[in-house]
Length: 458
Image (cartoon, rainbow, N blue to C red):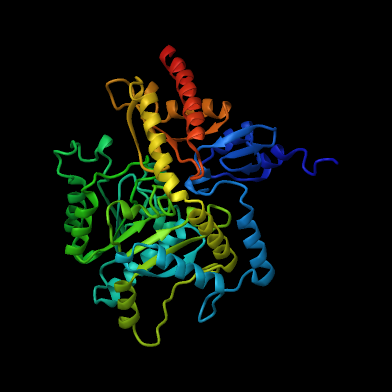
């Protein structure tokens, strides 16, 4: 039987636009077409098997090829594929998922109210709307600014993209002026030029300084990732969140946690906040809630924020926010099946144990490497920060050149990793085993050796 699209790569080059891709380069190189997957491995159109060392985009937590999720989706679509949840319409999967997550979040956080979105960007957009609404009904309508942190990534839509503070995303579109930033807890590349622990976690103090500079009567919320993700996979110092939470409380500024990457087991806890006993006012999530099998994100709201909006909003004025696919029943059915797998197979605990093994193996393999400046991680998140010897400058003198070469060498050996600025980053599916980790680190070591020879020769 002939293949329906024998010129698939040509059709891709002709018609399909790819994010984070230089169009002129893609027209020459063409795509790497994937046709299947199981567990941590993917099959390519040309018959190769490769390890998905980045879980797609931090999101395929339960691995590829899970028929349970496909079956749950098909069953829901046969019953009711979709209906909007505007006004008082609802569906069983959305109700069940909201209840299940309310039970899954740490009880002390009292995160009992949910709205589901299509992904992380629109979850953060929705959360900003809630934060501003909360401040307005509390009699503080001038509090409209959102404070985020340097190196933070919160999406690419207008507001969430403005909260993203990675410079390359703003080359042609400056952030909205209602968004400001403060220093991040990135100790290896401290925004303030200080050294931990003698700094006293000055990056948290900088949040307070920015609130003072802007005027606390203008700031609605602070949004932070428990672990900086796209900005370089950077866990914070142990004391950071206690200081940040106290600052937000002192100034009546809402604390918004972006758990889009860190939620659903990625860090070895169900949610990143559990590592530091954070009690946020709002939480956004996406990615691992369905393991990428269908698009879904969401916002969880604390009881105190919910009660303020419920009790103080003007009579007769509903919450004027809504997206066509809020609380999508089929996507929620996928999430429920995904949670079943995470719980049944103990994948959150596996992320903790196997993730610790991954970090230990990386440290053994790379701690003494001339081009490695820092090694860090938490759960199934890890980064190898590359630098010139005795410097924090890029290897080879050009940004991202060396980690991109490592990533290419790894691909050629059957492993997908990601070049994140000067980092070689890993985020394997939570189903990965110690044997998988051994294979990943072995390929990575050979890829580093190959790239290092090229750059040493240059």
